[in-house]
Amino acid sequence: MESTRTRGDAEFTVVNIRIPVKDTDRAMDSIVKLFEEEGIPVSFVKKKPQSEESRTYSFAEVFPDFHPGKALLGLRTREGLTQKDMAAAIGVTQTRLSDYERGKRNISVDMAKKIAATYGISYKSLL
Image (cartoon, rainbow, N blue to C red):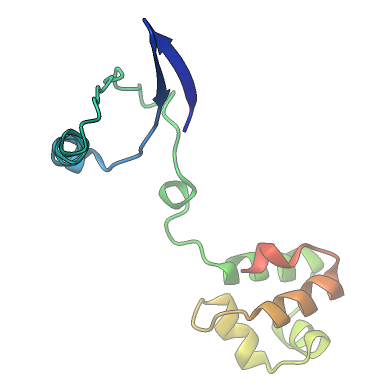
């Protein structure tokens, strides 16, 4: 919910919902039908399309191939370590570290905390 506004004697809550553009009309029809069944009035405000330059992009749109292993690879590169060196430091095999970096294996919370403690970073960046 974004805010509450008053119009005449009534207060309204403004709700923003992100919906894929291709599903907008269908979603709006469904919302109207649902609320009408409950006797709740609904109105929509269509905003002008944003220009490409002013549009907000999601992380997934900007980095579609990102996975936590890429953050681990970046950390290892920043530290100037080989896979073998980092694997030894965190107590895994070089093969397992490689699997983490390539996104072939998920980094567990415990492993992320161990790596974070070793290199002074937030474990959340590896999950």
